[in-house]
Length: 324
Image 1: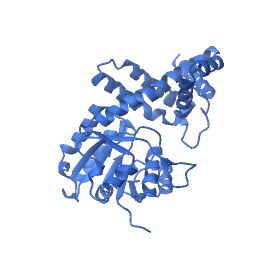
Image 2 (image 1 turned 90 degrees about the horizontal axis):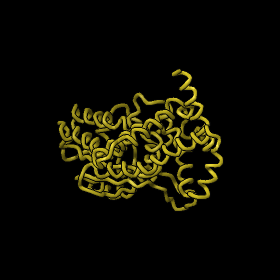
Image 3 (image 1 turned 90 degrees about the vertical axis):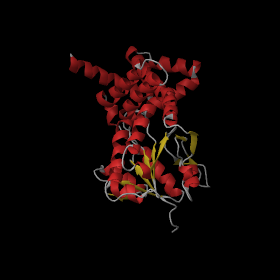
Image 4 (image 1 turned 30 degrees about the horizontal axis):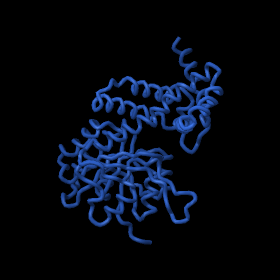
């Protein structure tokens, strides 16, 4: 077996993290994660992706040359703080062997700047190279019709004073494997791009959820779908794909919508109301309907527009009864 090019840490091994791990392993890298306190599902997912299971953040920070943070927005700060704490206690990482920490989470520019400051203001600051990044698109996966080992890979824009391509030896290959593109020397640019991108994709899905559910309650959902497929076929396909796929991820998207609202307010000058509303839509799906129990790869409900609308309408009706 060939010696791995480098060991890459990933926090955490969810749907996206495990897919990135498989991509890296397929391209000659080894991958590790801290499995302490994780669920059996996460541990099994890590094993299936050939991820080495470590038992502490200290082990992860010392044994890996790069750590990719891929967590829900609400966990981004805490995840970074974990690595800061791991680096500031013994053993210490030497400055001539820095750890590259890439925050690939869906957060606002102001949020990622705060995360970066956790490293720069700590005793470990000189031994860390912080990278602002974002993931545009779905998880990596092998192309079904390719016999040459080609993969579908999302785009991963990065920004800041450092890039993974700077790493001597394997950096250029890692950068290319992850389909990265360094777009700016400024921390916040890559995260800001993600916020603007997701405002289109997940913003459209939140509107479609409300439209389809309301049409269902009015008894005109079939007619609405017919009209959309006739007059706006491309929009309908995007809406259908988004609505059917969102249920297992709705809980994650609450925080992402709040980060988008912050971005459009702080950077664009707009009132945050529209995406605070979108966050409430996804919170409703996650907390008040059976769709909040859905798991990727184990879908039972919400696999059609009609069932999504029916499940949400039922959940809203039950919530009203409880509140009355």
